Image 1 (tube, helix red, strand yellow):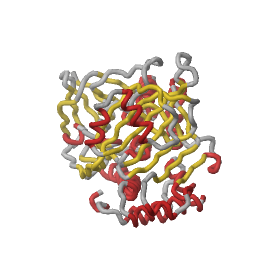
Image 2 (cartoon, rainbow, N blue to C red):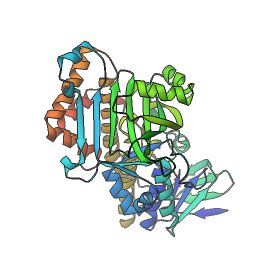
Image 3 (cartoon, rainbow, N blue to C red):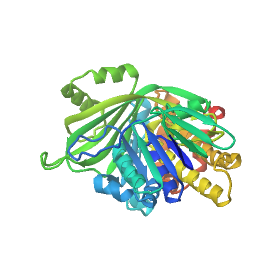
Image 4 (cartoon, helix red, strand yellow):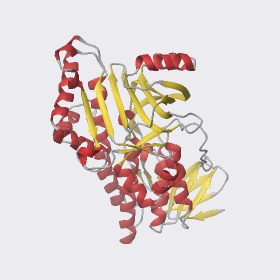
Length: 431
């Protein structure tokens, strides 16, 4: 059996489901394919181990798709403040005021009600599946994967592992960092594996739901706090949060081997003093950290979006925000192609998508690398430089707010000084 569509999206994660919704709203006949079944929400379950800091720009996009209200109906936590500071112990630290190594970003200083929302990835995905399912021109094919993609000058054909065939003018690979679609298209990647892993720990703590997310930087990597929601009536006066601990793979392996009691003791000892008292560990997991960028974003009738095209160091939780920016850009380009009566896989249109998105994605990659290289060391000159840099950011609210507006998706450009710094990082030409 063969079904014909305008566009087939492989991957029904956050970016794939957003694309299905947005393109469906524009009247395209869309098929969204994923091996997984429809996600379900259990309000009594522990929080999803993976969460994202959705920016104001992503919030606007999700509102336009009709998904934001669904997210709020489930659960999302606004954060109004963000803090970063240097926790490295070094004699040079005594030469500087204690406040010089900390920068706070506050929504009030930007004239905003909040900087963003901390949302479980599964919650965002559930909301976007709901909006995709509500679009009459969107067909969701769950529980099946792709075995083959073939292309002609007229169309592309996707063969599913259940034997079904789908034809379309364009195939969008939104199937994550290990993208099969990217491999089938013959698109290579540049990849840089960091000497760190990230351990994510869902915890319960004493105190109200915080309105701040923070990262303390250690030579072994940052340790971060992301607020979630109230633990409910069964645990009065307690709330839930997601902690992220970046460290060497051997140290992460050691931490994972500990009992919950021993791990809580390690957290209370090794995390910054700003951390509330932890009462329970709900769940934990770890994953490697890598920067990866597709050598091209399209090949024939196949185009990539989200993690299939790029993954970044997750220091600031910007990965999904970049993916949503890809989705918005691609939707706009495909809408214009149809308006002009062009093939949806018109090479100039797909080239325009890459010309717009590759520089933006590369800027964020390099910005995260700048933080990684600057903070993950004990070299005295760099220790002094980063403290002076934080002190300068503290003293110059204009520059500080420009960085915040960029991270929130309000401004498209970083301040010039940050652009100059990232342009000097090794590996620029390979991105």
